Structures are given as structure tokens and as C-alpha cells.
Image (cartoon, rainbow, N blue to C red; front, side, top):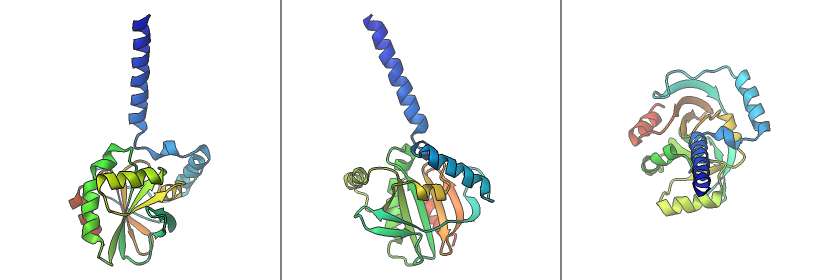
Length: 195
């Protein structure tokens, strides 16, 4: 009897862990049915397709609208703004192992471009608790700015299908390149030089 209960508990734990790992970096699970329906409708009406493979920079051309999001201090920031010529916008979650893999590179890039008026970097945390992310950033010693897409609207507008993903956006709010998956510092730096 004890052996059967133990096996059942182990099986349930394995299934739950597998389920978590398969969905860990997928924002679609976070969106409710109404948002998923809206996303499907938008996908059908858009006239662009990604080119290349997930390992390459995907050159695309489509426009996005501005979004006003809160930062770690609760202040509102509009993304993209018209101050920089070009910005790198990164979508991520703290539950995504691939996102965590590139945090040091993101910090290094932020340190390099923070005084540059021609380029910028925005990191967009998607639908996670701001207090938890603030604690995470403090505990890990990261100083780059984080904005919160609490309702997932910006994530939908950018048609994010997984984390992490980076978008290169110009002053006219045109998305020039998309790079899914984690990036090294050198890749991020090279992407910003594409202007």
C-alpha cells in the first residue's frame, strides 16, 4: 500500500515538473481565452512573416504602437519613446531559464549604452508580480531598467511567442529585426549597431 502511494506521488511530481518545463517560457499560457482569440485574429490580419531560422537574426518590417508601462519605481515609461534613434526591446520572465542565462549580458549592454542618446535598451517583464521582480533584481545585483507588461498588451502587440525574445525598433516604431532565444553580449551589441 505504501509503495503504491509513493509511486503515485512520484508519478504526479514527474507530470507536474514536465508540464512546468514545457510551458516555462511560453507566454501564451499566461493569456486568458479572450486575449488568445484576439491574438489569433491579429496574426491572421498581419502581412509579415519572419525570415531565417531561430538561430539567425530575423529581418522583418512591421510597426508597433507605443505602450506606457510602469518601471521598478512605479513611474510610467513610454516604449518606444522618440528620444533614441534605435532601441533594443527584450521580453523576459524570471521563470524562464533561458532568460536568466542572458541577464549578465543584458546588464553589461545596459552599462555600455546608458549614456548614449542615440540608442537604448528596454527590458519588459511579462505578467509577473512587480514586488517579486524588484526583489529578484536587488538580490541578483542587476541595475538595468525593468518595465512591467502587467496585462500582456505589449506582448501581444509584438506577437511574442516565447521567451526570451529581442526586438530592434527604430524611431518610427518600425521593428527592424527579431531575435528569439538568448543572446550573448556581443550579439546584443552587434544588433544595436544595425542602425
